[in-house]
Length: 127
Picture 1: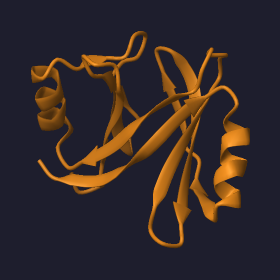
Picture 2: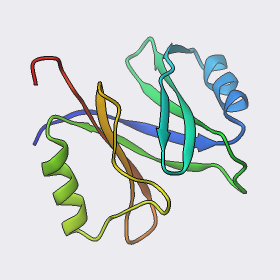
Picture 3: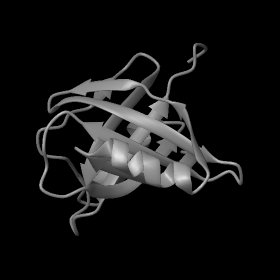
Picture 4: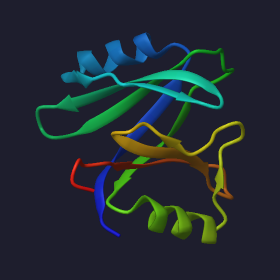
């Protein structure tokens, strides 16, 4: 399995405020796909800095008491990465599920210690 991307992700019901902070730091919006899962719908704002840094801001369609932070990890083999994480005690986040978006396969997982990983494989047309 190869890691193809690695950056922070912030999930919030106040995502626009977070996006504005990162825009002030020089990040620009790249794209904003909509993701629908068992927990609801979220808009992911992918942001990039001119120095090559990325951050994703996940706008949740429900109120949460606090923002959640984690790591987005893109891989070239979702099933292998999923097996690696589950073998180490990670579980699918409560209420979430593996989602196939057509262009990507993704799931949010939680470590035994509590940190969040957003696992994703982009699906290429040749796959």
